Image (cartoon, rainbow, N blue to C red; front, side):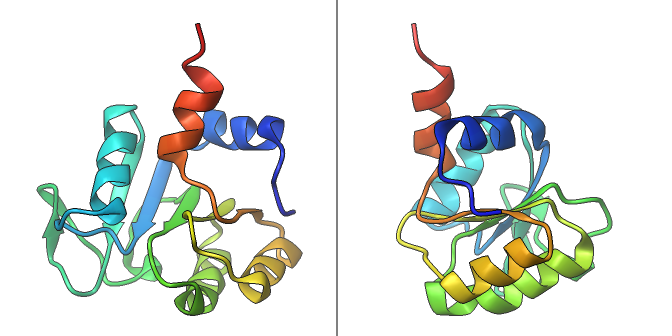
Length: 137
């Protein structure tokens, strides 16, 4: 299911706890700032990036299949053309959500993940959506 409504986004963000951050990095940018934000908000963030052994003092995994715990959401900080294999891994590990960050759009990956039963969000950022949907006065 492709999720675009505020209600659907809110539902995802209220129900996921463990997030694999694919493309997470110790370097400045969205792949650093957004996972830190999610951690500050109480989410269990697991870095995934074959170029790093550790990010934020946490073990960084080379791929989703290497993570020893259940993943609720896979958050992609990678180029759009690199998402399809990640979608396949997300399906294989039983993740519930495939989230593609701002500027990350891959219709083929979205369709594949959606057909496999995952909720899919494209071209959105939880760092924007959480304050917008939950931090209202």
